[in-house]
Image 1: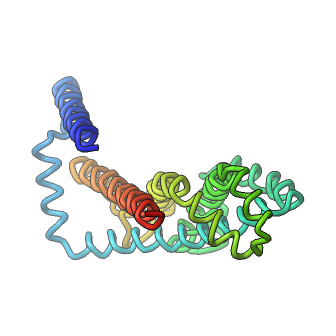
Image 2: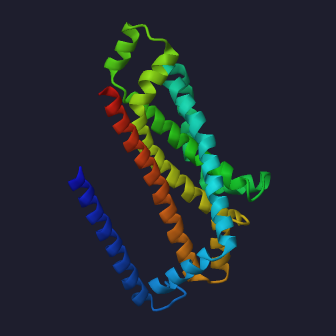
Length: 255
């Protein structure tokens, strides 16, 4: 395990080094700060952002919107996945609905919701619309991965359906589901920021990006992009830690 963690660390350092080299090559090839800013300019702009109260308000607002929209998608997706796992007719019904939701053009939906709602509310609906079908498919796939022997054992011991869900299906599928949830949460953040940019949402990271692009503040635009990427990695990492803790807890619990 330690050897694997060490290898992952080495690969991560190499990946960062390669991206930094690619940035340097692109910077010197462009030869124009308005196209690609230098690394120093970008991180200097990032430092200035950290000193601004407006940035932290925007950052917090974007994070809260992302978490709220994701939570609004998470719990219905889990509940419907459990129902679909229990009743084939619900699975068939939701299959068509989820398929439609997954194919709806995101940009078109943003424009429609901007007509119906406000620039602060529209990104929340759009992020929910993208997250829900992905989470539903993730949860359903995790539940389908529960071995048939566990289902047969639960039926043989005449365990009630509700107890089966909380004692068998959820504990066994949770590690797999959490792995997918982390990636979906990171995706939800990216969708949220994209929706905020198009909506020109006030007091948001996307709104700051739109404003930086308008005034050709390219270093600030790059700095904000890097911060969104880092936040997405952090959210995904938290879910990965939760998954690892859950797996370890299950092992100790069985011991």
